[in-house]
Length: 94
Length: 322
Image (cartoon, rainbow over all chains, first blue to last red; front, side):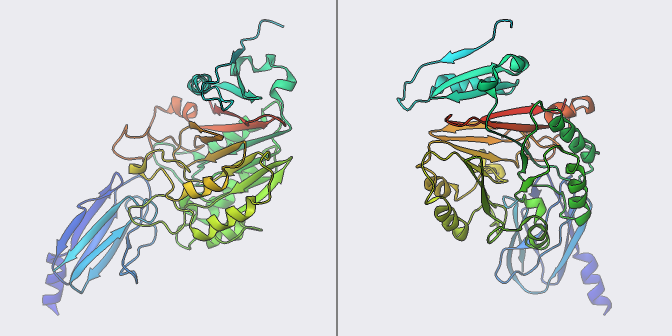
């Protein structure tokens, strides 16, 4: 049980998006990582998987709001902001 | 009456009745408040400050309406901490027009976060406008969380599919389109097959002399694709309107006024009543642009549109809140 907690703590990735970009645009993490997105823009954004069916979908995030998702399977997970579709990114889970 | 400043521009190089050089000159003036009226293919322009000198028959039309856009009720960041106040200032501006507009078009982003109280506040503020009828199309900020269900319940009576509709006023045919739903990653605004088929059918039986006004949130021409300022499949919609002698396209989304003329189509975007955005490519991103507080009202605005029966184009005049 404690091993799982350590795993989460060590591999919890937090990254910000600002100025209409996801930064970094491509993030590589090990299986089991919880990734948290924080909106640092002064305009709302969403984080929506482009897979069908969607792997994840956040509610609307205003400034400083967060969304987390745990990637329990390997693969490449592209996503975008449904409000500003030119904003795209991907999470690579290995 | 003192001398009028009146330009008649009579160069018809393309033999299509449109004096492009004159129109471009007029477009440059439009930023400082020019009133351009096309009469029988000849462009006449008047400085807005002299508008009181223009004869009634020249300026007054059969139909007069106002476009407002991008009120973003709920936005409260430094670019404008009081969007309700600036929307009220826009209503004051509308109420001060010498001729009360018959109705208003709101080209979307009514709310900032699609919250019920945000829509309620806009409804409340617009109630004090002289024109009681308002026609809406959604912006991407109005259809968050629920695929536009709330928007349709509030404003979509009589609309089809995702909220598109048309209506006629004094012989002018208005078409409200929705290009903010089902946006694809990396994409632009989109109308979709069902809506395009509806447009084709909607205008099929109209006479070519019917003036058309199309209104939608995201620009229907390619203003700046890098920032998503365009609609992927608008060319198809415009193809269905090719037969018409006068098409005016009114959009919002980019929070600044911009005009373009292409054949019989005049494209125009409105300023926001909430906050400005940078010109294409002039900043890293298209987000809210901060200006000194005392300048804010000079970069927000409304658009007044007049139609004179028998004329080729509608007269579209922007004015700022300052």
